[in-house]
Image 1 (cartoon, helix red, strand yellow):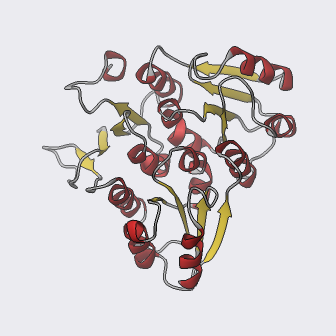
Image 2 (tube, rainbow, N blue to C red):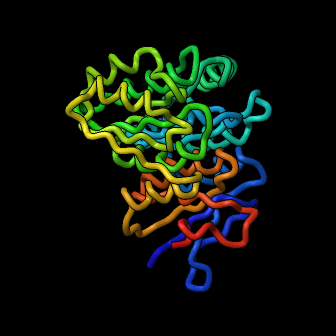
Length: 294
């Protein structure tokens, strides 16, 4: 039986014969991330990842590492006061003086006050954050310590829909996510690719988001590697190409909004844990586009 898991509206229901879905949600994106984390791990945990809920890049990049760490991703706001939901989860599931809080992003994304708060609770803290999202995604990819030859995903760092489609895939398979601008690979990526010698590179999105010149550069760096572009005419067709490639017959499906990023990002490691896709929909429409519906 196919089970649907939704992260859209402020209520929680359980799967049953009459309603074969579970809704994971809260009144805000931060409460929703907490609800997803509770579903991911309702007991004690040794690792928790926190990332900003005001931008998509860092939480997306860290989904692969979070899966390796068996850690939920908690989204936080700009201040500790506005992020109490995250620390409520930490207090319940990571007793004082135990575990590691991983912070994705630099102080401009998640302020130093979060480090100080975590340290005051007795937790170890490890921040992976550089000057910008591209350097951060590269540092996170290096932290995953993937084997030489492991495939990678290349996604735009300028918008979220295409990248969301591969978050759970990348996490479940352990394929690093490298973010790039449209027309030029970020500094350091060429040397990383040369060292990794990835057997496959999956470019997510059409040439409007990642140009042919970037694809040419990758072919030059990795002449023996297979390069596949997963793209459609819009975000829904692109995500459908991802589902067809990696999830031809899933037992579970997660459904989240394609019009904003937080809920799908929170669910990325939960979906990966269940080897499931995150199907993106437009919540303002009565039915999904045909490509998604089919």
